[in-house]
Length: 399
Image (cartoon, rainbow, N blue to C red):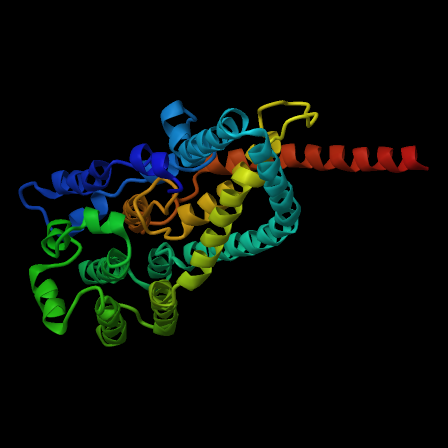
């Protein structure tokens, strides 16, 4: 039962996931709300709060991901079984029986030593494959930030039609993103538990949702909104929304869909279950036999009597590795060690909304800005001189 304490007390509350959507609802349930409110309700706080540089290390955040929470109960139960066998050996067996048990301990200890080396190689290779797959899945997740950037270069935001075109393209991309990941992510399924929640969040209109539903399961035809976006790009040349270089937007949408397809593929091509079964079986059998093979016999000098220090260390190493593999085997779950998909979706909506607002471009240069640039140029000149002087001094010192 690896990770028992972790799964009982370390899992993030599902109310936090649903609460993200509730916050979205509160921001859009106002008179006159429309699809534009979609870009007003995203938030980046949750996503960046999980980053290493901004997260505050507290006990409540440390405990679910600590080594004690993951394997503490297993180690305690294992040591209880060890000392029960040890107590029976010392107090309940006769001298002849103790001699026979001692011979059994020596036999197990001798043969378990090479098995431990082979097990370390087997478990290390298994964990390496799981970690590589976990990291590849995260790298396959597409980021939609590129789309609003391209619309700034290709779309004239001064007309209402062009503004609507840019927002619709980005909305369709996020809709496909959520439909694709909702099928494989437990957390996102809780955030958007029904198709109605998509219209409530202004990700889709009722008419758009009814058309997608008529085609089949939304999780299987998640690419339909991107197909609509492609159609809009094709019509943009006729409507003069995008006068030229439509192929750039087409390439960005194609890349976005390709990455989503790769993420979707990971759900179909799973890691062979038999490999996990072999590794788990080998680890449990090894430590089951070690309960006898690592027993301390009478008249055996030990630096730490009655405490199997090296057995404890091996248990921590092997079961720690096994727990690492189990914790990240399904990164689209709802544990603290899994991808923070809900916060990532909220961050994407926030980023797109703020990016679209930048359509006016940078502020125009003024006289005050020119004066500031002149001062900056003087400071840079001094810096350049100082750097050259330092280099000259270093060359003289080496000479």
